[in-house]
Amino acid sequence: MSTASEESGKKRPNVLILLPLIVFLALAALFFYRLGAGDPSHLPSALIGRPVPTAELPPLAGLERDGKAVPGLTNATFQGAVTLVNVWASWCVPCHDEVPFLEQLSKDKRIQLVGINYKDAPDNARRFLNRYGNPFVATGRDEAGRASIDWGVYGVPETFLVGRDGKIAYKLVGPITADNLTRTLEPEIEKAVAR
Image (cartoon, rainbow, N blue to C red; front, top):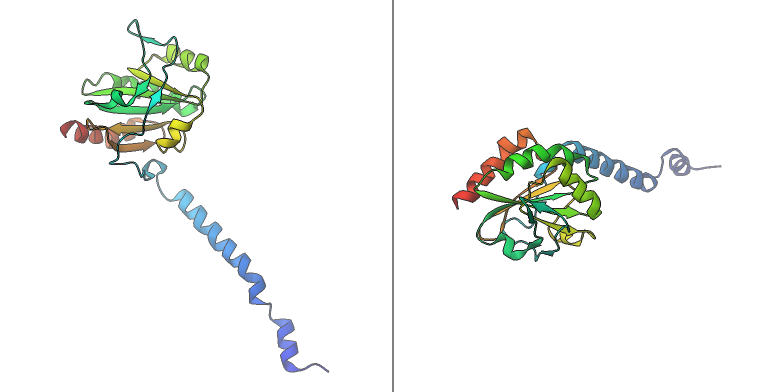
C-alpha cells in the first residue's frame, strides 16, 4: 500500500532534473535575442583612446603606387597624421564591395589611408589591388593574423581611425558602405581632423 506522499512524488516531475533544460533554453533565447538586436558595426573596442599596437608589418612585395614601392607599416606611419587603417583580404567578399569607398577616402587630403592585409597570399593580395586599384599609401602584411589580433580585429573588413597622437579614435566593424560612410565614418574623421 502506497502513501499519499509517495503518489505525489511519482506524479510531479523533479524540478532539479528540468533545471538544466530551463537554463539552456533561457541562454539560447538570450543568445538569439542579442544576435538579432543591433548593428554589429557598433561592437565596442577596448582600444579606443589607446595608442596603436606596436606595428612592424612588412610590405607587400612588388606592390607599387604612383611608380613607387608601397611601404609596410610601422608605428612611425601613424605619427602626425590622421590615419584610416583598413584590415582587408583578397578572399573577403565584403572587401571587394568596399573598394569604391576606399578609393573615395584615399582622395581626402586630410587623412592617409593604410591597409593591413590579413591572412592572405601575397600574389592574391597584389592581384586584388591591381584589379581594383591601390588606395593605400602603406600596406602591411599580416599573414599569421597576429597583428590583427593585437588590433582587436573580429573579422575582415574592419576599419580603424587613428588620430595624429597615434591613438585609436574609432573602429568600424564590417565593410564601409554609402550609409555608414556618410552617417558615421565622415563625422568621426571630421572630429579627428579638428583635434
